[in-house]
Amino acid sequence: MERLDFRIMLLSMLGSCFMQSYSQKAWTPHPPLNIPLEATGTFCEIRSNHFHSGIDYRTQQKEGLPVFAIEEGVLSRIYIQPGGYGKMLAIEHPNGYTSLYAHLRDFSPEYERIADSLRIELKQNKIDVSVQHLNIKIQRGQRIGYSGNTGSSTGPHLHFEIRETSTQHALDPFDFGLSPPDNQAPVFEQFGYYSAFKSKSGGLRIGNLQSLPPGNFPTTLLVDTGLIGFAAIVFDRQKTGGFKNGLRKLELWEESSLIFRVEFDRLDFSQTRYINAHIDYPASLSGKKWRRYFKLPNDLLANYKVGNQLMGFIHLKDGESRVLRLMAFDQAGQQASIRVTVKGSAGPVKGLAGPNVLAGKSDSLISCGASIVLTAKSLYQDEYFSKECLSENGPGGFPVYTLGSPLVPVHDYVNVYLPVPAGVSELKNYLCVAVNYKGKFVYCDSEANENYIKARSNDLGKFTLIIDSLAPVLSFSSFTGVYRPSQKIRMNLKDDFSGIKSWEVRVNGQFIPADLSLSGELVFAVPRLNYGSYALCIMATDKRGNAMSWERSILISAE
Ligand SMILES: [Zn+2]
Image 1 (cartoon, rainbow, N blue to C red):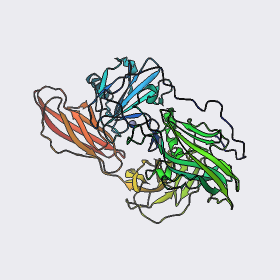
Image 2: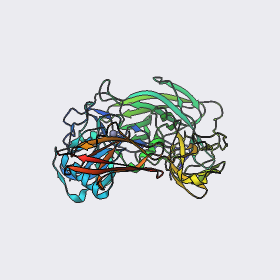
Image 3: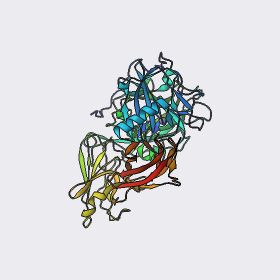
């Protein structure tokens, strides 16, 4: 693990590669859409718990636009899930890159048939499979599917990625010319800073973000002496009035010394959650996208090129003035900067409580008989967690336990153990752990043990137990019982708490591929069978194993 060296050292230069420009790659791909490209989302912009791994191209608020292969290649991956990419295809190209097309409404008919036969063979509706071995050749510019709004998508668009095949790291598609014209430089919206404190263990904690009002960029700022780090809300637009998109690069300079640089030219998916260390996590919970011009000790994102020994922080002495320049660059190389003189004000440096939980060490927190286990990778910096017992009950009528704070991001899943309350041990297989996320208790992947329920959580804060003994519910607005072959049947399949784990549609016992959307719409096509009466059976289970099954006879009419 990297450790801060707190000796005040001369800020060191990184070398001669400061002013590199983004060289366009030699390859010119075919555009994935046949409309002018416009991006509502760009590479590595800030999303919830991840950096955006591609470009979101506008599809004129419509679904069903043809989507084209950007280069010849072999179909390499088929993915169908209710969330995530929704319906997605990937193509591996002979030049070392892979392209990926997501949230599709449909694949082209030949790939729909392949997806269906894979789902039937695996008897699974959710698939994410490598299909390289099938050696399905695709031509440059060939139509491969139709744009849509499937998966975790909030409106019709094409999510498009280019990956380096050997590493599966995502690259910026704008570097391959698949960019709309960009004549707008980045814009700084808000400026802020942090005081940072060395903890007794030799680790680091930062204080709360000190934010100035939007549009307020002081020329001189009085701050506490000691370690100071900077932050800004900054974005880029491609055109006047366009979407607020992401940036290529952030830099912090003092005179001619580069103190900090983070560059988003590629993304290792295994590191994407480090976004929660790059942004101000508490502010992000209310939608504010602060970017930090420093690196926390346990943030291992490979995109940082830190120029000084203090990982982007500066050490300010009493009465000392330093002139800093925060810079932001867009993908087209346009830049914006703000310049601020910070002056260390007299007076003792204000410390922070604790810390009592250290980054880089595994630890367990125990509160009122409940516990949580943190791994060495859980925390980005040392933290202080209060250990008080609350006497409140959650929505399930069981005690609420406080284990850490929801304002502290955790990198790894943490294991949570809540005791099975007296008198409900016979119900323990229905008990699940819920964590309070943005004011609401949500399901954590749970398993019942002897005297406790164990769960995995992505969040800290308030935990409680909830009983989920209700199976998913199937509903529909019309069911005629008479259908033509290939006709689509639409129903709703919903679960009250833990969520749908699996679903299955069978006709006379034969598995029929069926799509479920995040909103609970279940869609499947009537199989191409001869005229006659058939048994239609729909089954589903939730994540606690509560199962439902529904059966009717249907008449399949002539085509
Ligand atoms: Zn996207």
